[in-house]
Image (cartoon, rainbow, N blue to C red; front, side, top):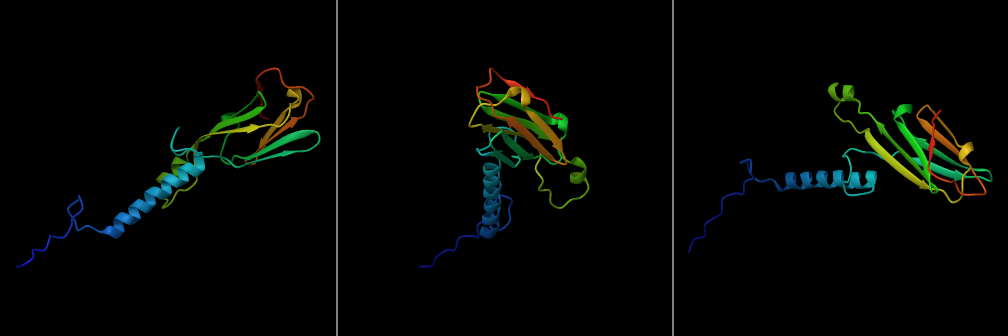
Length: 158
């Protein structure tokens, strides 16, 4: 009784099946998924390629201070709003199409829309809020107040 050997497995493209290549491809896809989840905090809602700028929120006796890294973002692409004790920051960092066409072998800098929200632990003096943007850093100073704000406040970036 002779056994027939099965022909070697083939991939859909017609070549010999390479399990190592398939594992590497799977690893790369999982890495991209993990990076998106870590960057955006969800499983893909919103625009792909979005990013999350890094931020520090601190407090002293007189105020709350938010400092956000926004390299490559233009002042006019930043929107800040305070409503019901939540400071919201939204904006957009444009892609650098020239670098993509210039033959770069790897492009890792993120671009696209971003949004962050920060719950403040106490009320803020709406009239004293200051926002300053320069050298890729946004700094928002929110003086503390004894009472809660009356409604939404749009903050102008200087």
